[in-house]
Image (cartoon, rainbow, N blue to C red; front, side, top):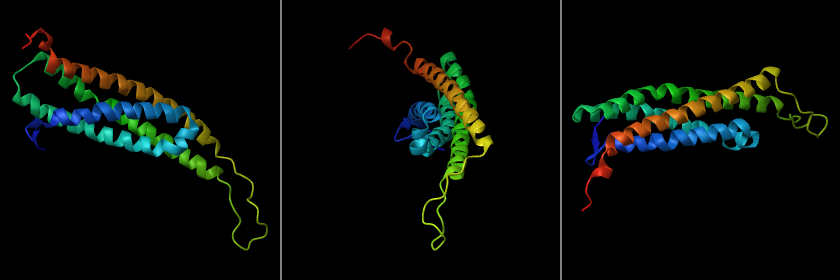
Length: 179
């Protein structure tokens, strides 16, 4: 993996994807966990956003390690690197819980979909709606709560990592004289 793209550190480019997509996935997770209509309409989009955000975390961490090797030792960078190394342990459970929520939602939706008679079968009306298996109701609640919980944790950790990185880059700039 290249350390630089057009003269810019790859890390500086990739982290913007992480700090946008992970909070967006957190927001989406909360919305689809609490609002079934949004889950039906946007749930798989939230899964995709969370998947891309999750995939970008190791790229950001790896490119950050490459950049760190090119810079002089700095305790702020070391703190940022330590926090950044933990981010995948917050974002991956978020992604998996959102995915589980949508899988359970899909199973429940298919189980409750009205069935229509085959062409030529007696009766032309839609038959009665079936009920979802009992386990899906419990699983929906559990996966929704997990998505919210992991979302809050991932959101806090993204903030902590980003704040440490910002301090590592910008610390002391306000003390510089203006031109």
